[in-house]
Image 1: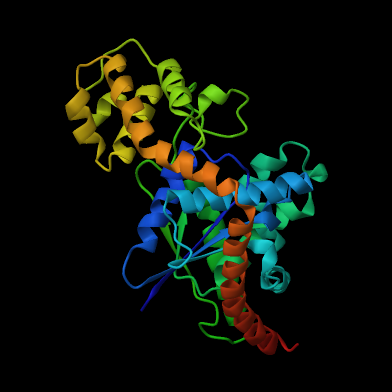
Image 2: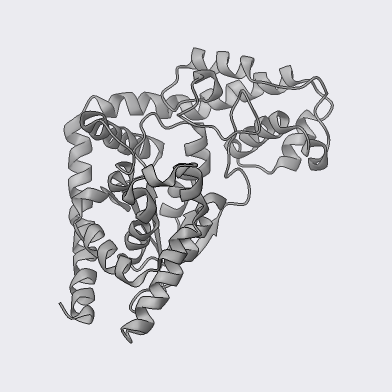
Length: 333
């Protein structure tokens, strides 16, 4: 059976090293696996659960696709499109919403975190976000979905929604129950200024992250200023347990170098952070600089990016519209 992988990325603009190591690098690996079909969606419908500037949203969608292509995704091997271009996502979300239960959504921890204390002021879109996510995944008969720990609960809900629909309408196996692909190592890259917080575009300090568009000089400055502690680097993983900044920098080096943490610690054991920072700066520049140059080149050609999105949307719509046609027949439309 062919493995079908689906993943969606929010168009937040200025993707950073955390996005690359936690998601995009793996997208490229999946794309190059045999007997695997990959669909990568820029989820602009999800993005508007918080207020967006329309022109900025358009630009962010293009920037995200530019980062995809520059990082090695190939539109001939993978389907790359933006969610709003395929109407089946919204149609499917409504039908699934009618099978879903309030109690399920009330348990979603991510909504509680994002809505904060005053849930009454949160948008309905933010509340039903997981149902649209379920529609995204189920429309394409996805067998596997790469997720971080923070999204695992949403995928479990997707499976619950799919199972309930299949049972309610006596449509055995109409919706496939997707399996999670959980990246064990390096899935969460942390802030360069605080190893206890995830690297994020929303952090007010640009020194907290390596942007995929950063110059070599900017990368060098940010790594030099990255927070560390006063102890030498340990010789085993246990020595990183209570040292979040050390763990983060070692993790970044290991992931970029495609090696496990033990091998990295063996190289830097007993050394000071200055040694690690010199090598890490060289490695980040080696890996990220070509991506940065390609992103800048692609962003100058909006027509090319739009053509990639349009072709991807046609391919995605061909798959999704067939599923919606079958869905309507089952429901009785």
